[in-house]
Length: 261
Length: 236
Image (tube, rainbow over all chains, first blue to last red; front, top):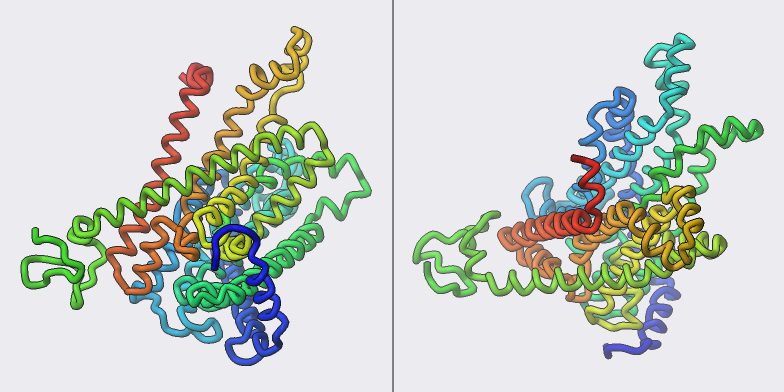
């Protein structure tokens, strides 16, 4: 392929690849790979939620371990997803063998994805609970709430928007990392991209990229939509003064974007 | 030590990579392939630095414009977030029809990612300047330009630098993905290490990558100290 200048041929080829039904159906077709990657993404996200969220929320409640909870994100940013995936695949453990529905190099990919989803979840959840105003916490205590009640009825609802934006970041991160997994013979749609590029079939590579990018945007919009529903301060919106005070904490970490693989 | 032939001399002394041994940590590899490692590292740093600088050059005027026009702000933030959602392995191919299999593809892709982080942190930094400070400067007769350069930028600098650090560190990590179009710096070594199952190459490249991120971060922290001497005075 020539350098420079829009290459119309490649785009036409990509379109041809996308519009051929054969490329979507059957074993190893794009529909198959899409399902595989979605399955991987959702599993990894759930695993990191189960692993990371309780610890981070608890630390935030106690107000301890902040250094760790915040720096885990910095470490996560510095480690290239590609390098970690490669190390896990080449190491004998957890191996390159197929792992149930997750395909070849499945377990290595799943471990790497889960690890990369943890930092945004942990950091945001910790900060979210810490950012609940001290006055609110004190009044909860003054009302005679136990630590548990204070956490469940006061801190958790107020922290929800920020926790959810952490989950959203993690979702974007996991989808991106799951794509990169194809660089190390992993499963998923990234295969279409790497196959295309490494065999000089650029139309195919670009077609794969289009699908991956489109699904990424859909997932992001879906997550944004869900986030709106999960925000409890939104549901009580009719009393405006209440809302103003409570969602003010959202802006501190919310807009910060994290690294995507 | 023997001269480094590609297939290591298993007979003449200890080697940790050959057909039979495949160690993770290997001094022999470092000396045999030092030129290759240095070249990859230089390419890596080059791509990272150019990308972040390009991101900065675009982000700054964009942030200033967005601050002036609130309607533009939501547009800028929306579009950059959208780009950010696209995985790097998909963004590079999408640029290939326009820039080909060149380092430009990688640089533009990485600059787009850096841009998102930078615009946000710059807007946030400028917004954090207290209104009273701004008013007093205007009261003292500062022009808009002077207000920006003398008052707002210095005060916004810590937040902006925090954004620059995040952008730089993540760009170092993302550069590896450029190996898709054969310009990934250390990522090329990682890819080669995976395809030939060469552990020493893989681990070495990964470690250098992390060290690079840390080193560039330290450089930025030191730069920030030099640029904001007043914050040092407060702390001590």
